[in-house]
Image (spheres, rainbow, N blue to C red):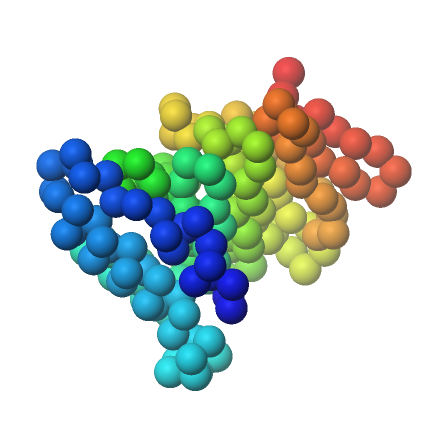
Length: 174
């Protein structure tokens, strides 16, 4: 988080042709940065739930943030959102995991070289996860794979998703 101020995300220029105008876009990004850096400044204790007010929607109990060249992703235990870096539009992904479910929750949103594909890592048990490969353009699942909790997800240079577990690598697209 300390290098966040120096990242391209922090200095991303608002789209001046956007109908909401650069003022709203600037407010949105400054609000996100302020809230993400809050913990670093000591203003929010570790156990306090993080809330992200984007001006479009309030995301409660923020659990993680990730980014690729097209989007910033936010997630809590049951939902995931993408913030388009060009249009500044926040959209909730159509995946939903019941927040009443105590064992199953979104652990991470992983990105790679293909900005239109992400992997949502969902914990099912302490030793078993489910990796859901998600198509961002169609807003639907491409595939899902039950894996050990220490399996690795990665994309090659062309954006093809893979999983590495034990002594094998699995190509996630057909």
